[in-house]
Length: 285
Image (cartoon, rainbow, N blue to C red; front, side, top):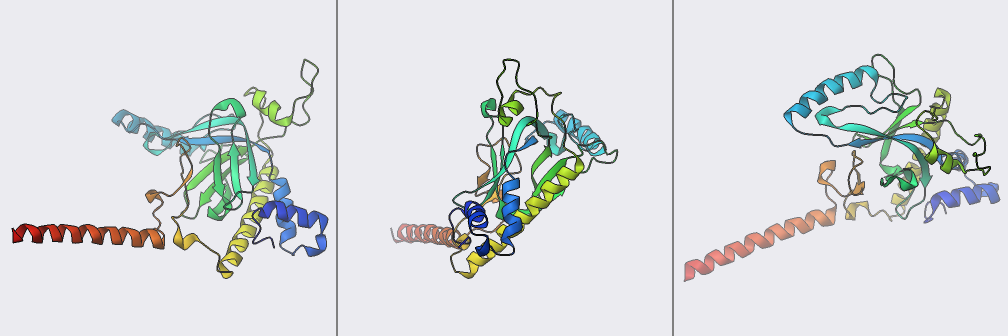
């Protein structure tokens, strides 16, 4: 039932809550993980493309060395330099959640509402590994840093888990803010990294849900309903400054779908045939 549901996470929660007797052994941990991975306050380190100039390249080399020494962005939210002049832009007040979509569950990093930044959506089926981000040689990085890697080993999402502000006092005006409003209105000095144990717990919940989605996708394939061979491969950009993050891209290095590949071969054949026919007509004249 869950495997064919258009809303697998919602179905997972409902069945486990209303009809526990129908819940499979593997569904219990996944259901608890789905509940836990909702509106987690994070500092999202957006990866931005940098300058390709000579000066920029030299600066990025030095910055990349220092970034490796100090572990990139620090727990205070500072940006870090990367290869090729790329940089990480820390976004405070972001939220991390796992949500249902028409193409399957996705991990979503959502910036503050009025920030003008596009959210980043990553299908769980495209995630290979979730791991703690270490602080480099000197180990001054965030104690709650996490990075998400895709099937090719590329880092496609980096963030720090932050402490919840749910227990913060009422505003000066006397009204109570929601947790999201507290994070959006918070000053940089107010945010604090979560404990390392909290970070480890989130990594564990993500791994449980990713493995559950992997088994769900494998079961769908056995039903003969998998469409991945007839479509372009989904691709998540490692950068966060593009118009969209999920797209079919030649940079993924993956093969095209069967239909797309055949269509390209047929188009090439037709063009060659047309050129040959025109050449024969020219010779006849």
